[in-house]
Length: 491
Figure 1 (cartoon, helix red, strand yellow):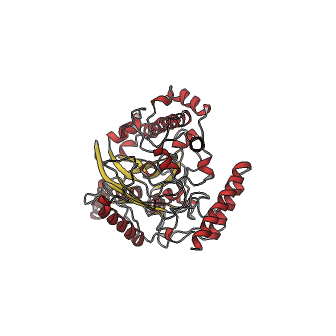
Figure 2: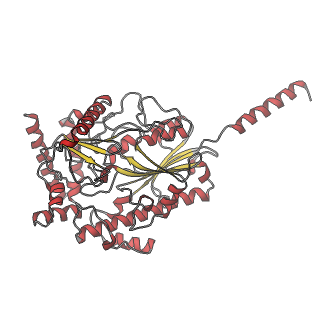
Figure 3: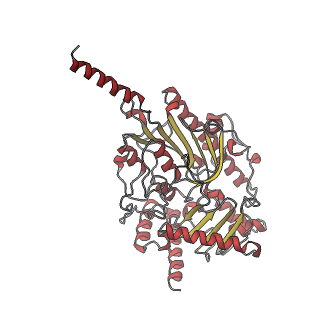
């Protein structure tokens, strides 16, 4: 063999050895569920069993204190896909930028799938594995390019190409706006049984009324069905021999859609399950430190050996040098036609909530929520004087306190507001300042009211989609909100 060929042979061999020694980048799968709190057996739910989510948590790391930064779909998902607070990127109002006026991300900020694509990943987003659609749920408030997704699942990737997949599950939405026999029949047919309403444990601020108990039972069956769908994802990964090289995250986009849950900053609305399993992830670990859902973006990028951008506000919670958060923050702004402005900060023990529009009732009129059977039943029981004092106070007080403070160790249901208690004066002041500092440091855009033109454009879109009674109800709520806004602006 000539000296040249011998050198070439050694060079090729050396190059092959380098390629072979390069660690394989893991696939990243996000399982994101609609409208569901941590009602899984690995989180302490006793009325149902959820073996697939339990397995994922047992074989990986489960976080007990994970919180979303927004308790409603589109702001939460806008934050999730950028790793930034929705209030920083101007996506804080629910279902924004869908009319003539658009919302664009700040310069330099790009959605996470774009970063994965640039790193050579195949990016995809779809629905349940058993029933894929063209694309899964996105619900981003800002303008985005659909080309950031290559497909609806990983089947279209090149041989050996790593993939980033978002599996979007219907979750709590399966039960619909009111108890229905079709859902009960589906659960019975596919899961073999229905959750009995009498087995349901309700928070004390909800009465044990038949309508509410049935709705909660249907919701728990949605948790069981979600567990089945998680099992379908894991089964496919196993069948295709991909599970051992795939990091799987499981979380929900906010808590249960109920009176004090979705759209509000109590733990019923912002506390979510969060578990991760895969190569390099410690198994059988339970972590009790505080994390935010925007941390998912930074953590995923790091696992894929993609640099975390400096503009990203999420943190890699699996980093060897990770410094746990000492507080988490959340924000609620306009939801559909209903204008609101609420902020919160939560440390390891206490939560502080600020109601900027405290002259409004807790349950403002909202066409979406008032279409729910549970809200209609609560309003009926309120009108008939059949709610107890606690339920009346927490759900139907005509005005809200400007500030709320809860000792979550002693009062996990957030029933007793300590803001006026002199024993907690220093704690209140500290958290008040902490929230002020966060709003300032992160450039909270909710501090500036949404432009009237944007609100009107969004309402035009909503009205065009509704008919009959719902449309007239929405018109009335829009007018009510404008009257409130006019009063505030005239002060």
